[in-house]
Length: 353
Ligand SMILES: [Zn+2]
Image 1: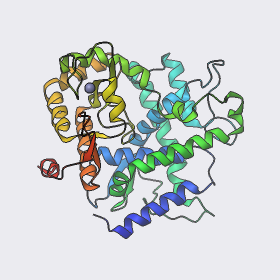
Image 2: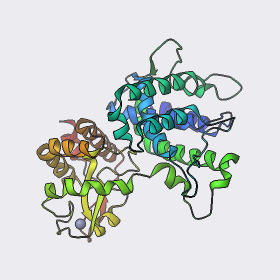
Image 3: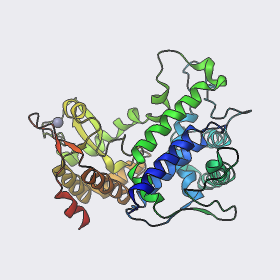
Image 4: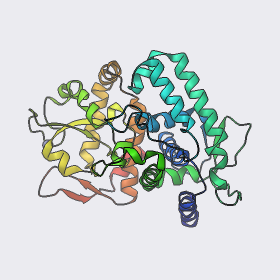
């Protein structure tokens, strides 16, 4: 794995990228967040170089910008927040608006399925925008001096190849990268003068930009309830009208919803668990649940327009638990007398097996 110096340097340069103000849109944040997500999905855990295609990045951009391209104010349907500080809207947002308009839906998965040709051409457009702008300029933020520490930009390539050690750093520091990017991104949108008319004091802008999926999650209850014998996944108490949908790997650790990541809990457990990983036995229980019901969950969730990829979900969980062991993180237990305790290092043997 990369040396401590290398990792520190990585963080220092990410900070430099984020702090630099010579940019005119929010693409930079989407590029960093998308790259971190993809590095995790590829399961990189050593020094390897890692190639990420512009198409894959375009998928990430769509997921990040999709909900942000919905009207911000309930008073006005044209209150789409500006993601660019120069003239007009950022072209990625325009591509998404065009797709939403032509498919007549604001559901990402329905749009994806409904018109494959249109979906492909949208991906292509966004991929070429990413290549032309943020991928090209990301590392030359200051005085046009390029510091190509993440990748060497190649205008002819269809991929970005992360230098040795970089994908590893993205997976290790993805949580702070995501959090910082969300904050800088929110600030950028908030400061944009075109957006001022839509803001009022009682609206949490960051919540609008990044946490929109909560309502829709309720749709998963009928699918998951029988996989848990109508009991809370953690404390086994019966679920009646107190049902919550929990991100098994917390949203704050990995901000993309994949169906197999969800379990049902009661109020008490979800409020107590917050952003922690559940203790080790639940990792096992979760894997077994997916072994037994994974296929059914996938079929049912597809019907209501959810993204599903069991393999990807399991790679992400594996990554999250592995990091937790390496960092000696606390895990959460539904047992009130325990609640939080250090994760057991024995888990690593199982994870490596
Ligand atoms: Zn419970």
